[in-house]
Image (cartoon, rainbow, N blue to C red; front, top):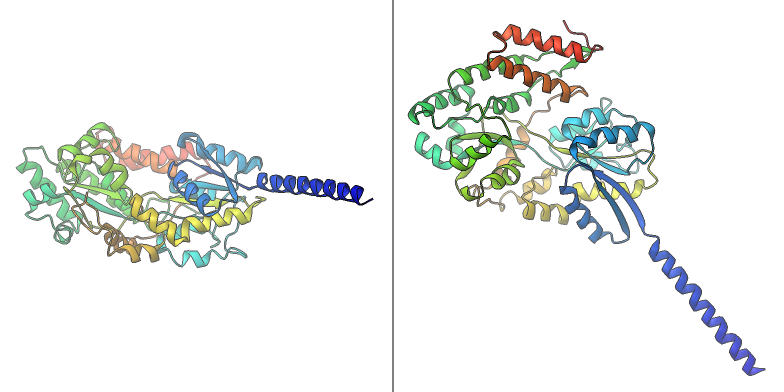
Length: 423
């Protein structure tokens, strides 16, 4: 009897161990899953760091090339099939995506995103809200701009390479025009102040007061009209080199030192100058120009029918508020953040050898305070492209007068968007 009892007990124990092992194996296989879509490879770094901190979450990161990304994202949001839990959106498309009624309201409980916004620069906060003031996404990148300059050229032609002194010398467009005209003459046409009219356009477009569309009507802000006069003057006085932005001549100019100033945002340091002209390290500086401006930026948003909202919010909080991760991101990747509190903390210690030892976080933290909140509309991406096309036609003589340029632009807007009233 005792023998049978022992055998029974042994078999029961074995059975229990098998069941427990199966449960353990099953629970190990059931990791939490989070689906993320992105157009930028910088997301990979953040996901890796997120998973190090949250090994219980399995992130399915799908990278889609930028050319196809926006249309695919709009399509899945509209039909509500295969929608990712979290998705990245570049600033130029953000007004278009933000209006789709599939984005979670992050102002409400349990998110209370206003607490995160309080840590950010004002111009980023304004972009994160929709027309009703509801937070629909979180920006993780700070993108204030500055005038990157060749120290050897400013020393030669302006007598200084000190950032504060250079900032004073280029504090207005009139000063830049005078410098550009003089430098092109003294260099026998080999050196220009700016690479193209688009540097002027980048600064001015950040300072508009009215968006392209108001009450279904096309509006051309007075800042844009003044921009036309500025770029025309810059072309006539040979202040700009007429390079195509991102083109080969534009890139070579950074290496050869044929342009003195480039108006670019924060990410220009690692992704434009260090990438295209690595051997010029130490020859660059940062100065404030005529006006504060910004360029680009990326937002994170959440699908409002996601079954993993808790995980989605955990990732979004991580990318915008996790102090350890953000400090590492800033220090190792030269990444200027949307989180002003951390930027300000790092500002006194972060310097760039490429910029001659300049405290570039300190520079951009100051610049970020001054960036205006330019209004946006879902039409901006397309209308901006039409505007640039007509400005080029005007500068290259295909449109003879400013009035011709404006009228042709209006005609094109009306043809592409018949729902917009064009005077």
